[in-house]
Length: 300
Ligand code: MN
Image (cartoon, rainbow, N blue to C red; front, side, top):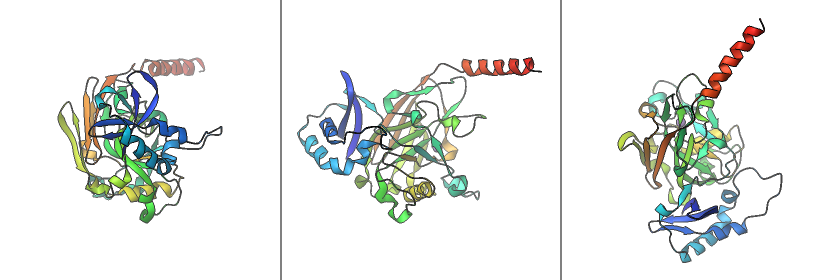
């Protein structure tokens, strides 16, 4: 099942849809079956946490709903409230072959505020600086846990989406340079894991303005999906809705500039088009440097 979150043309609350070739079938009424929560809220995404229970009802609702054309709605990222976004590092053989394996790098965290959907655009907040595209597989955790073995890891996966780990180039460290708003695109929908029993068969590509920039296969990951989940859960508790990005083929990342259009494809998931635009620029940070210098001079 392909599950999307969308905004209807007339606005209003977020809708949940089931995607097929005919369009989106609105199954939002299923949300009434989610438990009413009170503070302190449970960690993670409530819909993903209850997806197994709600799925038969969603299928039933989808059967009778009239399809809405995809082009008529605004798609949002399918995961509304992930607990965290984890990202793999050095997960392709180009790095492994130099004697470094992903376990040596660990993983980094992208804040949930960086999460965005295909139609939110990637906003280059510092357009005077260079930002690279990194297309990746986004793994969405369905069943939480810690100390999950690779042998059981796929049982913890709710589904998959396409991920774009946008990365500012320069001296800023990980993860600040990957944490700007919109620098974690996950979409265009989540495909449930039962439709992708073996993620390694998927190939993917990323075009910028129609030119192929990245083209590769999930089968080439050094840590496959099961090992990525095991690696993450070896040190931290995963909760439903957590997103793990796989890592990107390192030699094919490259810059995007305002006005670019990225088009990402992944077999068994689909296609996602994301525009790139300019943000406000770095004037505030530059002022802070000047202020800090003035202060240190004044204190001499
Ligand atoms: Mn990455």
